[in-house]
Length: 325
Image (cartoon, rainbow, N blue to C red; front, top):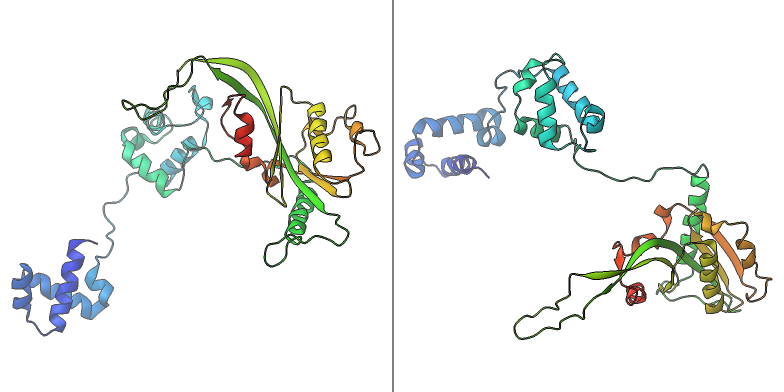
């Protein structure tokens, strides 16, 4: 709060207590004219008029609306389209471009515009051409239908629990298991070239050699049981439909044969291969007669997508531990 607002509030309080203008001025070390003006504003316009100054119009703006619109259009364009190598504007590069090309665009006043003014102007327009915000593009024409199906599945999971949060087990013990599944391919597998140095009295941290050895890449296939929250991982050196089948075999062995398994996953080609996926037919040897149901959806609707480790460098000896945690 500004000091002058505090002083004005004190003037009104002292005046309400019956003090004279001179007494108030002496107490606050201000002139009597200031006291009279504050009290006069209170009588004419109320408390806000006495405490706060009216916004002044100030000097007329030298930058026209057309010039401001031109600055907005420049900020909305890609720098690469205007001869720059970068994909996003920086405040410095945008300021430099506006100053350099303002006169030829017909706005000579902008040739001397300052960087703080551009920063303030963009803030007023709620524009942030220096930042990227991600969104999910609708590429699937059946998005709405699939979204409805997946959200219905999530609602059905909620209905499998009672009011105390306990799982409701049917009388026939036939559960409907729902697994949200996703993959993270291309994880860099690395190993240390020297053992870690444990903490000592001289240094309290674990020291690790900066050098490491690359061991190729791995793919992490994982699902989460939405009833129990249990993570079900599979680490593979490839990312093919055969790996997806291996994951299905893990599910097949994990759950009783009378349970129904529902899988929520995305549209990756590994999930729809015509040459491999017929092998998951429950009638084939090696599979229990589970009733599999597949729900295909965009990644934004997958519960497991947000649980993947964002790091691309993962040591092979700890990759399973990371999934478990």
